Length: 504
Length: 106
Image (cartoon, rainbow over all chains, first blue to last red; front, side, top):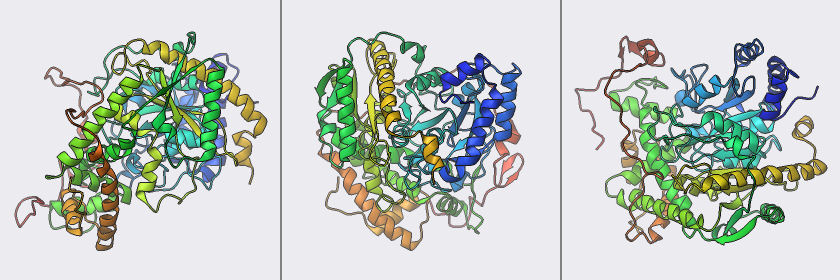
């Protein structure tokens, strides 16, 4: 029996009783058993619970838009089952007393949760090498990283260990691993998806989002997880139109903005550039209009991000003090301050400590204006750049990552080198606009480079005027057509991922 | 921004105290070098022309979100204590806070 490999195909197969939820879940649990030792995507797995959930679907006791579909969750999303570790020693044995809103919504939609996936510790990183537990491997080449920080979620999906997964994106942490693993990854508009139950890293930048094999799957997940939540005061009020329904609207003329600053970006792998240029040509062929735009403050994006994010992180991570939950030092301590310091030094990894220190420094008296306030002004300028550009185009296109997946250990020597991976993704978080990463080809050796589109996604007037709805439809529709083309080409050139993982 | 001044080991020790971190000596030196390099990079934001620009803390215009001050459902006590390292229900137990010469860390 051949198993469906998208949410929508699987959903239809279950509804038409072609396949039972239990059979489908067993298939994925079996794949996890076989492939997990090489991919190392998960921090924890819940096979018994998953089968129980699947049985309930088959018995008719569990229903919903995603009934019976196996989905993995990034391990910084609070679940009342199992552990929520954020891949940190600080929370290694933490059992969340509540479910994140997104988890509750997926549960209500009938999802079968396969497991909690590995990430860079506290979502800080671009390769999943900062996990305190293990480094997830890229299923396309296990000597290479899957990207980060949602590396586990991207790898689990790419390796066919689930039908979809959920991650979080603060500076590119969904889009970049999606790119390096060859799947679709979406960071929604800030405020579109409730952050209640997402362990906070940088509150003005964090967003939860879907990984899917197709844009349609990502849209289906968005329909389930998005919407106002009174438990998240940064949640955008108002009704959310169906993302999936938008796919059927006619395309019209899509104006694709090519930012000259992105084109001139140094450090780009020539194969990535070639694949993206080919994608641009293809979109042109499909009827899109190419428009040159300028985002003049692009060069300050990473610098502003690595001030804002660490500052917010130093505040958010202050709660890990060994008092109420999480790790507490077993060393003798003379007072409460020492309890805090020893606990935090033991519980946090190097990158986390580094970022907390940067943040504390930048916020400290004498430096606050120079660093933090300046970064917030640059933020305003970056947002203004996008507002201006979107007057001339509907979406902005660039590679997601300047390089394809790099080798494990290649960039860990110099933190700054790792930070530069985020050059194309951070500005979306800074401006609060959505971004999506779509596979567009392969480099030699089968490491996919990826194309990214930034643009309005049913933003209900927060980023753009209401014409954004039509643009959304066009983005998704064109992408769906485009993907079919790419699939045909890809299948003729290379084996599918199951075969790749099977070899060696 | 103090472009000329490089972050020193003393600065790092001070910041570590503020952040309630206690890296060992080897780590402290490494952190000094790493932070110097990162801070030098992020300092480029001072080159942007921010004349007349208001700082933007949030990408979306937000106002205070309020609700009525009524008691709503809350976590039961056992759940609140379930991850605590040391308890004497209903209390969390910690090292002493008052007395002796507690460093204010300022």
